[in-house]
Amino acid sequence: MNMKMLFEHSVWKLLEKTGIENITLNMLIEDVGSCKGTFYKYYLDKFDLCNSCFDSAVYDGIDRDCAFGTFCEECFALFKTHVNVVRHAFDSADVNSARAHFENKIAERVSGLPTMRDAFGSDGLCAMCVSVFARSCGRIVAEWLGGGCEESIERLCEKVRALTPQYVYDAIYGNAVARVL
Image 1 (cartoon, rainbow, N blue to C red):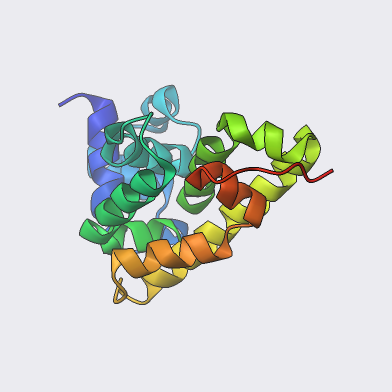
Image 2: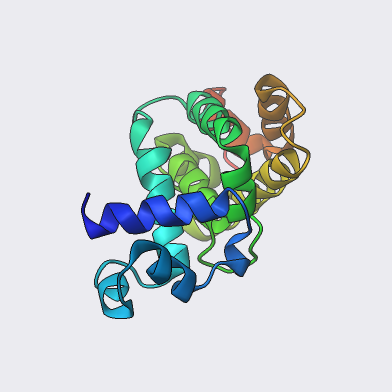
């Protein structure tokens, strides 16, 4: 196993037990049997390491061309499979946290839709609306994880659809889009 995989395995294992804020670089280095220089060869910080794990374990396995709803369902199913890890990774307010990384993935999916520009006619307004939507998604997913994923994935997807601003909803789900301005 290469060093990168060892670090990813280590943070995943530690996240089973504790939040990302409680994991230190020294804990990771000790667990892997390495040094700081080797860690920094691959990662900027523990959040970068955590996000690399999420890319490998969750996001990279989802078809880039799938519908937004499918993307959410697949993410949520994988999150539920690893609920402790994801909950502990999402418990940070850091701008580089796994939660922020998830929100960025949501924003990338939504803002990449060709109909988004048609709906808003303004890149600034589009970016602001998508950002608010992505942060709202992150909040409800964090609450779902904190509750032990008691609600079904279908119910969580309904909540995502319900909090979607109308023009974003139209762009995602293919309804006729009217210009805002």
